[in-house]
Image 1 (cartoon, rainbow, N blue to C red):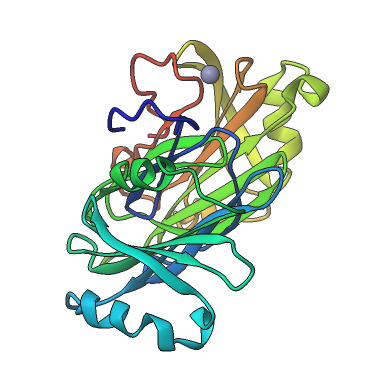
Image 2: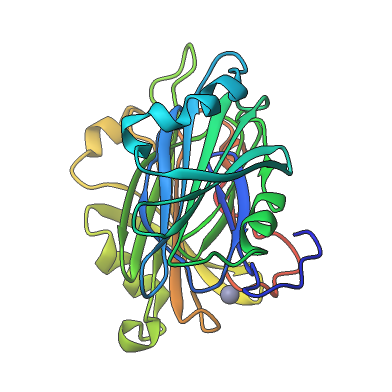
Length: 305
Ligand SMILES: [Zn+2]
């Protein structure tokens, strides 16, 4: 983050679909898209919506000036009065006032690395905090989507191996599930899959027996091997297994083994679970997944394989 000492501090780092930025600690994601080509993240605080970040694939850099000059004629922005227009950290920024006197900051930029148009909307009740929008815009980083992706949202902080894409998500207040898939390459039987789950309020339900938790949470898998592993400062259990009821397919090598890793992070009061599914005959190391829980991890944890 740039050296903005202003209130509120942008201490929460977000990484999502090759976009990185920082928001205040108490902002929460209430809506999220998982499509790389089009989607948005919407943040709220305890009172109201604070930010939306939207992205749309755009093969060539659009004429931002023209888009913005047309701003007043757009049906969605009718009634908003442009108070000021400037550039901040590569964004074109419009400060606007709504009919009821609220301020809204709109910011637009084209990210050449991911070839997407990025749009931000920061509503403020009454007069905006002057330093917030510039600090937030300055915190933006862009990445090439082909590179190993950093995910940082919903209390999950992970580095996903190259080629994997977010394929599904299920986000409940204390239970977050993110799934990633690398589509089958030629000559391969099936896609590779990764899953990250973060379950909060661990102290109320997790008794400390990781192997038991894995069995209970994944009844559809038959595990044959449990062993301890270090994940940062924690001790995890890594279980290997196969889907139940697929004995013959498994005998013929048609079913990919699963590797489930589970550990408790007392600092976050959360239990983390990762699952790696790599089709047979493939290098299991090709799906190495790094998940961090508490900030104190000096080394990246590696799971799977
Ligand atoms: Zn931890």
